[in-house]
Amino acid sequence: MKKAVFLDRDGVINVDRSYVYKIEEFTFCEGVFDALIHFQKLGYLLIIVTNQSGIARGYYSEEDFQVLTHWMKQALLEKGVIIDAIYHCPHAPKDHCECRKPKGGMFQEAFKTFEIDPLCSWMIGDKISDIQAANSGGIENTILIGNEPKSGAKYSVNFILATINIIQH
Image 1 (tube, rainbow, N blue to C red):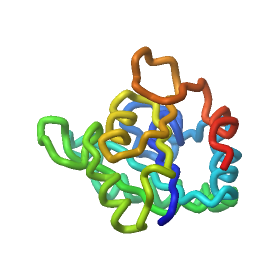
Image 2 (image 1 turned 90 degrees about the horizontal axis):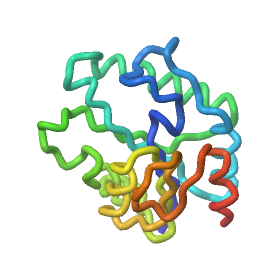
Image 3 (image 1 turned 180 degrees about the horizontal axis):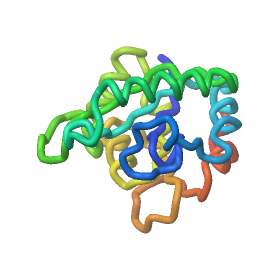
Image 4 (image 1 turned 30 degrees about the horizontal axis):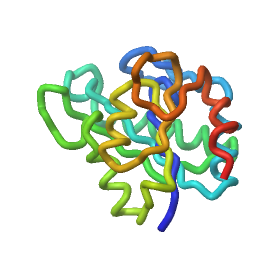
């Protein structure tokens, strides 16, 4: 079985500016390249799990999301970071789907596709729903970026680069 670091996108990979779908609005978070390279060197798969309700709300299209995603993966690759998979939920909260965090559908799909052991994996998010989704998928190792009280996360840090002090093996 493999191990993975699951990452939320907005607020973890990039600065969260609400419904980011244009390349010119996308700014990588400080330290993200170094953190992701660290996880890769430790043998973790890197998997992004992101709610993208802006698609269902009509703010942007699936194609807009895919264009930005392709650009983001290429920009990361140029820094030496390989993203193994990106799962996204295009639904609105009112759709009550199984893939939208805090439900664990995206995690379950990744577990099956990549034969991932949730007990050896991590989730890094910036919202309580990220932590809840990871927990519902069986991931106990969770890190919340920010100071959200009562998040349920195992660890809390202010910046993604601080996660390399937690994930050591």
